[in-house]
Image 1 (cartoon, rainbow, N blue to C red):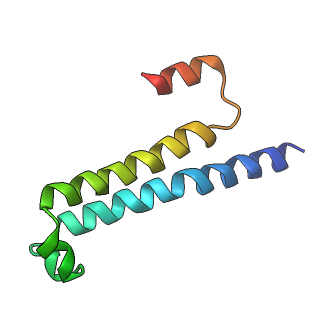
Image 2: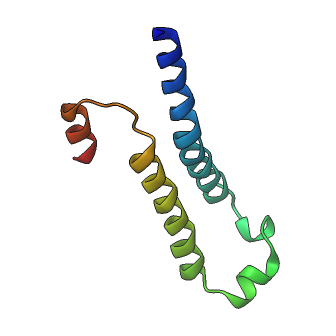
Length: 86
């Protein structure tokens, strides 16, 4: 029984926190490139401001983080929940 609980905890962690880590990794990868506009679709840089692209990019990261914090925590004690909120 404890093995099932442990397995479901890891599954929940991967399902909710995996996209956060993956998306943050993508942001890191593209920000480390000398010319990221060469890797993305050209119309994005012609028609849309760089500031707007950054706002959308980090807005999506915020949504993925919200999803992970809201649904991916499992059964945490009150003390651990309070710690995450700080």
